Structure formats: C-alpha cells, structure tokens
Image (tube, rainbow, N blue to C red; front, side, top):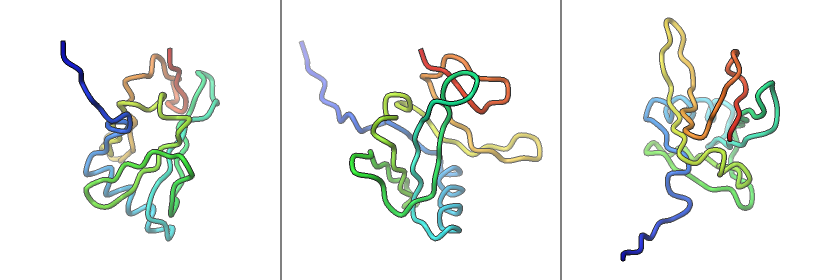
Length: 118
C-alpha cells in the first residue's frame, strides 16, 4: 500500500498563457495586480462566476500565480466549485472570450451566465 501526498491548494485553478496575459492587462488597466474569483448563487441554473480586479486577496483565499506574475485569488468558499477549472482566453469567430473549463459543472443556462454543480 502506498500513500499519496498532495497539497489541497494545487490544481484548484490553472490558467493558460493567453488567459493570464489578458487578465494581467485587465488588472493593470485598473491599477491592480491580480484577479479574485468567487462563485455566488445566481441565474437560472444556480451559480455564476464573479471576477474582480484586486491588489490582494482576502484572508483565507487560495493564491495561484501564473507564469507572467498574475495572481489569482480564489475565494476559500468557492474552492470546491472551482477545483480543476482551467481558465482560457479563446477566439470564437471574430470575438475573444474568457472561458471557464470547469469539470464540476453539470449544466449551464443557454446564455452561458450561470451553471449548476451536482
């Protein structure tokens, strides 16, 4: 029998280089150095992502640092909803959009604003 050791903060959220670049530009444009991500009850399917540019996280936030120096602060009460999520910045036609690729989502509304988790 073997025992696997892991850090509960590892792999909460990963971020692609394109998403990190976009988010850092957004944060710096508002005089901030990072982005705080949380989940709140809302919408027709239950939850929505909340993102805000910040200079620091709150007390027990989980911090993820991207290769370009961007700091993501994950609200501690949202970690279970976000664990394993990848943030990507993708081109869809002529538009670019930030995508949450969240393996925990079981359904999403048609407009893409809210989601549910089992």
